Each structure stands twice: as structure tokens, then as C-alpha cells.
Image 1: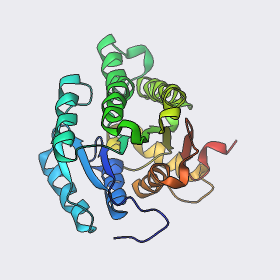
Image 2 (image 1 turned 180 degrees about the horizontal axis):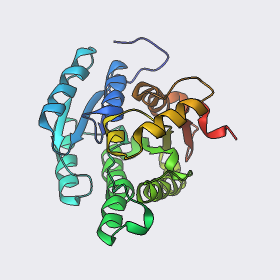
Image 3 (image 1 turned 180 degrees about the vertical axis):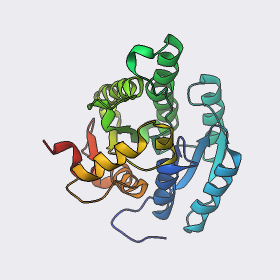
Image 4 (image 1 turned 90 degrees about the horizontal axis):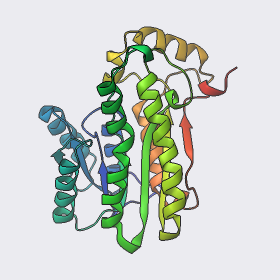
Length: 256
């Protein structure tokens, strides 16, 4: 187990969408620092089983996984019931699960818009409610994962970008409403990351090439970079950070 200024021993964590990519990296990083992790997955049980092995391999407490759709309130109720039975409480929520329709805005159907908004933005409301009920008067940390598409126009990303902008706004409101109860709510927003999700973009190669060219740090962001930022925001080192968006992009978004 990693030794550092951050010790999450005895903390119980829920990471949504934790079987692959950024979510899996977050699960591993928090487990490395002592947290016991529960994550949900939507369909791929094999990926979830592989994630469980990788999380357990870092030497932290045994993880658990639950099949659940974060856009379905009944699924979320079952997920939180499992956490209550297994953990008895919750200290950290990482809202990472995301899906969406990749089309030009003018081609979006109403169901495309609703589906994307439900998964990427609205789901944070019942997730936060369920998490805070299990946090009780101890408080805790909630971190939502966003992307630069919340503030920058990216081809085919209109619905997802709008949902991420809504997500970041919800975080600010949740932060001011719950800070006095000891709950910190923040966002980690990433630049272009070459994960499985990016394979669905028709312009994937162009996004990666343009991002690499524009990034002062000289490389693309990795899932591990995002996990490091989440680790910081879930630790006591960030105890006075509320309602903020931490951008992890190697400086790409500040280049004129």
C-alpha cells in the first residue's frame, strides 16, 4: 500500500463507472491509500471482474462491484442498500459514470438529449442524496468527473458537453447547500484522454492530435492523472475546497 501524506484507511468509497478507464484508475488509486471501494458497472461483468482483481492487487481492502444503471433510481436504491449492508456507511462518492449521444446538435432527438442528461447530470442528484444519507453527521467528500467539453465546443459533443456543464453547475449548488454539514462537493475536469470512450468519437484521431499539439506539458492526460486529482480532493488536504472545478489538462485549455 502506498505511503504518503494521504491516508484513506477506514474510509468507504463508491465510484460509479469503476470497471474501466478513468473510473478504474480512481478505484485503484483510492484503494492504494487504504480506502475500501465499491464500484458499479452497467453491462460488462468481465471488465468488472478484472477491475476487482486490479484493485485487490494493490494491497488495499477487498473491493465489491454492483451491476447498476445510475440513470435508474431503482438501481441506485439497490446500490446504496448494498453499500449499507456491506459497509454500514459511506465517506466518499466519486460520480464518474458517463455516456451520451455523439451527434451534431441539430441532429439530436429528444430521447438522445434526455438520455445523455439523465446519465451525466441528473444522476448526481440521487447519488448525492444517497451518499449523504450514509455519510450522516460525519460529512464526507463528493467528486464529479467532467471534461473540457463543459466549457469548450467540441465536434459531436453538444449533448454531452451541455450535460457536463449542467453537472458542474449542480456541483456548485450542492457545495454551498451542504458545506455546513461537512460535505465537500467538487469537480475534476479532464482534457483529452485516450480511453475506450474516445473510440466512439468519429474524429478521435483529430482530437488526440490537436490536444497533444496544444498541450504545454507535452503529453496527453492519463486516467492516472485524473485519479491523482480525485485522490487529492477526497483527502483532508482539500478540506477547505468547496464547489471548485480542478482542471487536469496539462495546460491545454489556457493556450490561446
